[in-house]
Image (cartoon, rainbow, N blue to C red):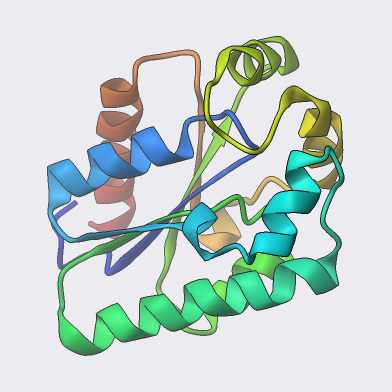
Length: 174
C-alpha cells in the first residue's frame, strides 16, 4: 500500500492492544500524520475511566466528534495519510468517524484476555487500568471486511503487524 491509497487508517481495539505503538509504526512506514485518540478525551472522561468507570455512548460522542474534526482539519491541509489510534469499539463509533473519512481503512487489533490483562497490569502512566478490560471486550464489535477492516492478532511484534496490514491492504486494493 502506498500513502495515496489509504488517506485515513484507523487503528482500533480495546485498551492495551497496542493501538498507539502500531499507529506510530504505520506513520513511520507511510509518512503522514498521527492522531492519538486519547488526547481528544475531555478531562471528565479521563477521570471517569481512571476511576474504573466505563463511558457510555453519550460520553463518547463529543470525543469521537473531536477526532473527526481533527481528521477533517488534517485532510484540508495535506494529502498525506492520517493514522488514527482510537478504540472505536462499536460500528456506530467507526461510522461517526467514517462520515468524515468515507474511504477509511481499519486495522483492528485483537488478543487474548490474558495477554491484554497482562499488558494493562504492567502498563505505566495510562489512565485505563485492567479493571475496564471486561467492559471493553463486552462492547467490542469486531469489524469485518464490509467495513474495510483487517483484523490482526497482537501475538506478534509491532513491525510484523504493520507489515501484514500493509500486505493485506495492498492485496485488497490491487
